[in-house]
Amino acid sequence: MRYDTRYRSSSSLFNWSFPTGVKWLVISNVAVYLIYFFGSYVRGEPIFSSLELVPWDVVHGSVWQLFTYLFLHDLRSIWHILFNMLTLWMFGAPVEETWGTRRFLWYYFICGVGAGICVVLVNLTPFGNPQQRVIGASGAIYGLLLAFGMLFPNQTVLMSFLFPIKAKYMVMIFGVIAFISSFQTGSTVSNLAHLGGMIFGFVYIRTQFAARPGKGFRLDLAQRWKEYKMQRARRKFKVYLKKHGSDRDPWVN
Image (cartoon, rainbow, N blue to C red; front, side, top):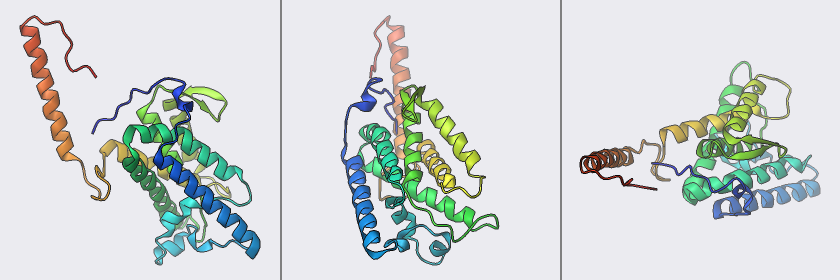
């Protein structure tokens, strides 16, 4: 599969586009947050504890937590969900418009679940904490940042909403920060999930896994073969044009 990396313009990052996948992810996260907030306030304690990601619980059967933790955000600070949803819209919208809704959602949840798997595996080691609770969509969000940087590497964006920088450099900086921070202890931020989301996102994009949602993980060999034949036909056509003295440039996209 080939991705169209020709981004529209430097200002189109803020074109107020709200495609279907991004829209429903934002609506779902906000709705769950409101239920989580008011329900916990009334009850006096968190009502969705069983939906948080706990490594020990996952390996003992609560595998749904690898999915559900993505929709929970910190009740102590509204900035957690606001930042995630703003980033989801800003960088997720152009990715969805390029890939389409189904592939975008498939990628989003691969990154989110993959980030959760990384958290579980590392915290089950002697250096981790199997009772560590993790919530938030940041793993999936970091996967989207990576996708944006790979699809539109030279697009100028505002890092931390302040500093103009090319997307590819922003992704590198966030990746390095997530990697270094993952070795720190005592932090309330799951930098390991951030790094895990980027790793799974990178593997997905580079190997082009799961060409069609629902077909499982596989290399899209048929598509690669079609592209090879197309490239071979283009080369033959160019040779033909040169032999016949044509200056036209065929196959303009």
